[in-house]
Amino acid sequence: MREVTVGNVTIGQGMPKIIVPITGITKAEVLQAAEAIKNSAGDLAEWRLDFFEAAGQPEQVASFSKEVKQALGKPLLITLRNQKEGGNLGLSAEKYTRIYQAIAEKGAADLLDVELSLPEKTIETVVATAHEHDLKVVMSSHDFKQTPSKDVLFERFMQMQEHGADLCKVAVTPQTSADLLTLFAVTNEMTTHYAKCPIITLAMGDLGKITRIAGQLFGSAATFATVGEASAPGQLPAEQVRELLTTLKV
Image 1 (cartoon, rainbow, N blue to C red):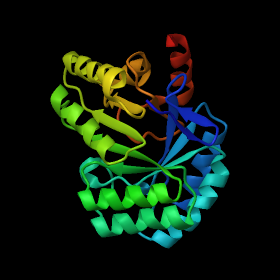
Image 2 (image 1 turned 30 degrees about the vertical axis):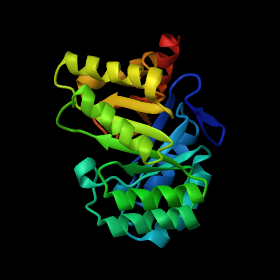
Image 3 (image 1 turned 90 degrees about the vertical axis):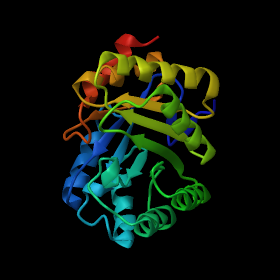
Image 4 (image 1 turned 120 degrees about the horizontal axis):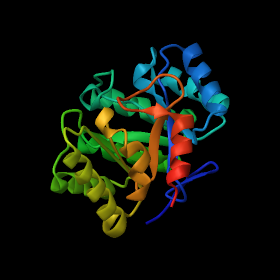
């Protein structure tokens, strides 16, 4: 399984890396969050572009991403989350593609999040553009209602790898403790037998909090934690997550 290095951070090596979301609406809020994350326990930041008031303006986003990257001083993952994946925007595939192309060609980022649920042509275009400009791709799938079966989760991971993902991320919503066992089992089997790249797995909500800490025991290469506002249910403070990850280190 290959590792993924962005800046001075290598994902898939050592303890899970802590990714901290930026959910600011205005430029000032985004930059303030970036400054806070710069001196935090987070290893890299995820700018949730779908929260940003100017998200639909590709040129402005690309230009401002340079300021965000400079203020952050750490690797930057940019995520444009669609509504059906838990985001704030309902964008056409064409608009989605144009925004990411502008970031890749004229902006500043280290990774782009690309949703598996997008049309196949959109995925191919964005992945190709990202790789052409030396950006890594985190391909993601989110289920806010349930935890799919093992077969479904395996299929999603395989599809992500076939699409050229550099990292594969699956987030689910557990209803019972058995759902957590399903996620851990899939994570372990993927990393042991099938993963060609680092994978990230987590479960959302209160029941899923344990996955944000214990995922490293089964092979999850990163987790999400907060410095300020959370971007998904169940996220814990970054300083606390760092302490717990260190305690559980194997």
